[in-house]
Length: 428
Image (tube, rainbow, N blue to C red; front, top):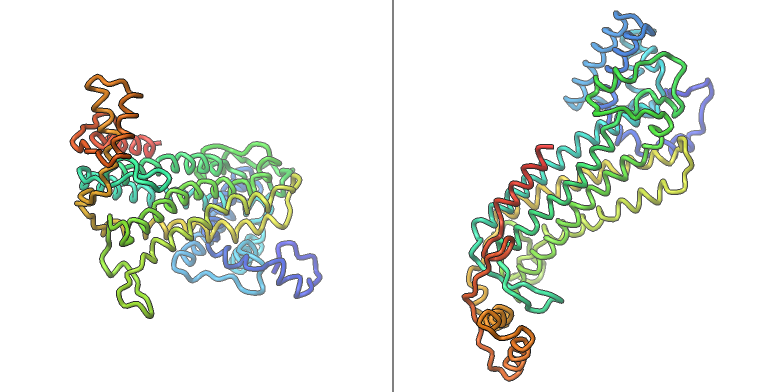
């Protein structure tokens, strides 16, 4: 069954090529198509296009379909092109002609738009909560190890003293930046496109404000052409939000892999969280973090992929917009799994508390030693030259007890301030 069926059969090869894996992704979106259909049925009765009795019957039948989706019993048969045709068939099978009325004043275009945007709103909220969980874990670890120092690097050369509080707190605060992007993507998705039909509205006297309120959208996408142009755009903005988090997670995963190596030996994990080698019995490999790194690199490429898919399309609907589903749906699931695994793994991190006992890290304190000379009256440039000469001559004696007091330093990592910033973000 096709919603556009005009009495002739499409070539089977064309059918297979145009539908592709759409049914698989529609199983994810079907719940949202049903929710939107309920609001649409109620609106049709409100404006007098169907009776109240017909609307009630449609809503009741849609609730039954929704329950079957929740139980995992809903399927899309090969004879159906998509979730929309399957759902309309079930309604018609149960309600007869009343079921056929559900498509009044709608197009598959605005059906897909509204289902996708409802789905993205829910998934962005889930990603946000998983990110907040990782944030809490990182700040908890920062608090636990706030007095443990570790080397800071520039150009991968020993640079200045850092700490676990700074390292972990840096990634926590970076996640706040990423959630600003997630909030922006959510705002773009939170505009009701239902009623735009095929992209040019409808001659039926529909009430778009009613469905906006019923579906919990913040606002309406007023211009129907603009609503249609949102197809691909909401997915791309979501992808930018995901890519931000992926960038933070990928960088952190790289740090973990580096810090776990024997050459660094800053942190370790229980053997249960590592994997082995088929020929080297001593190996404990950081496969979890390497895969997070790789998956997050793929996710950072997603905005460009969606941009290339949609960049040269004029206004109006085009079939390649269907391909957005197969990009964004798996990406969201990948992002959630990376967040969950990073949080799960970081809970088990074990810290080497004596890293800076190694004399190769003495040079970390050259700046603190130099600064102490300045405090005692030596001009900075002169102190810098004296320090450089002492290092070259092998006469450098580090001052390791210098205090850092400014906000965001090793002596004052501002953990509670960062926590408050996240709390304020989550409140909006």
